[in-house]
Image (cartoon, rainbow over all chains, first blue to last red; front, side, top):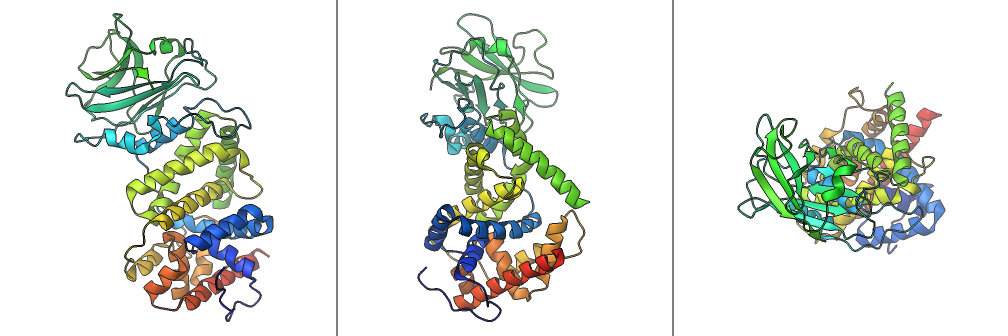
Length: 252
Length: 190
């Protein structure tokens, strides 16, 4: 924009637009020039096509970059901000729902930082968007719970969105389960005995589906709890192992 | 054979994206599982800071969720589409950082060594092998400059300072190199 260097050897026939498209696709422009190029991409289809042509030409370079597995907390945060939201009406703009506390990756991450984390556990628990929860009117409040150990340290955060019927549990707990043991999730309504919401798969980034008929207890004031059980879950239908974390559901 | 494999993968990713555009959560997670390690690698290479890279990866997939409907398979492969979003977000984040001390000169040359040799014949696709081959036809310093810009997101100005050459010289290395690369690729295609 400010100064365009004169063409040098080997650059004959390179138009200013083409040079800018190349520079932008390569990612070599400084902040101000980059912003200007982005505006052109938006407003100028010909320029955009030039940029995209270079992007496509350069993209195979990415194969030389070693893949790196992101930690499970990242998926939990993404899920909280995307699939956990109400199913989108087809052409609607991004939902204007307020950004809840669970949208913040730093928060999810921070939950685990107080304790010596042996292994991060992150579980995205979701039901299919079309699986209408039995009790969870779309008008109900979003619920949250922070599950803490007996020492008060938060181990796991949960968020329930009644509009979509999705429950998410994210991150971060010490993996105290040990060999042959698995964490199991429970909901306790009032003075009723705990009802199992299923064994939580602690393999990184896996999804776990709660049967629809078990969503019934997910309401304000109910307690979520996690116990350590034999593989396959509690054999008795009630918690048999140590309860490592509990927390009450409250309006988000 | 790699080409056929790659396009089968591309077709599946395109199908997943179409379902994501309809709000299909399972398809979205599947798409994430298939692509996130690649994108995280790209972002991490540009930003180096793990936590920042995680934040950017989150932004990228939220963008993918919201914009899946605008993906046009006629204009880019699915993986190129998301990788471009990832690079752009990472570079935006890099540009927003306060100016800091430059990485040592050797960094560009270290990076150069990570590229596959033209006939490495590893898992690289045919496109990647041909691009690497085209890069190897350039003067090593010019190829290094292209790699440094692409992989590190470094600006012309920063790279010129690092390489201790005038900015105009550096720009002409890169641009001339890219033009030669492209005519090599297109010449082979014709």
